[in-house]
Picture 1 (cartoon, rainbow, N blue to C red):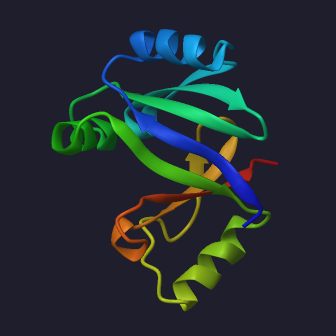
Picture 2 (cartoon, one colour):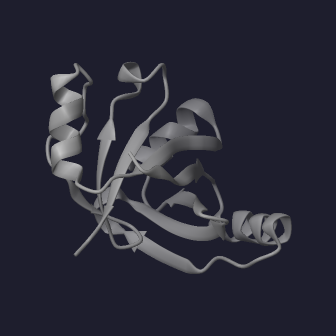
Length: 133
């Protein structure tokens, strides 16, 4: 793992959250994108070498909607950048981690992604990210 790629924050209202984080970080989001397969719309802010990803549900059955209903708004996941997501998935499975994805899928911000189950990481949802080539 190379670095923290981003911290994902679940929000109820993306417009309100964008305004708040624009003021907080003194910069607007550089990208907003819908990931239809996950039922989410995302907004990204650059913070030094890392990013903040705001996530709002686009449908009631999406993972983000379920998360907010259960736990409320807040930090949803920490994403780590990796050079080779397939080999990192294999390494982590060999080490005994439970993955939510056995193979990477397309995510937001031009990335291939996979998630580790929170039970494998002391309650923290971990995302692995690699740039799409």
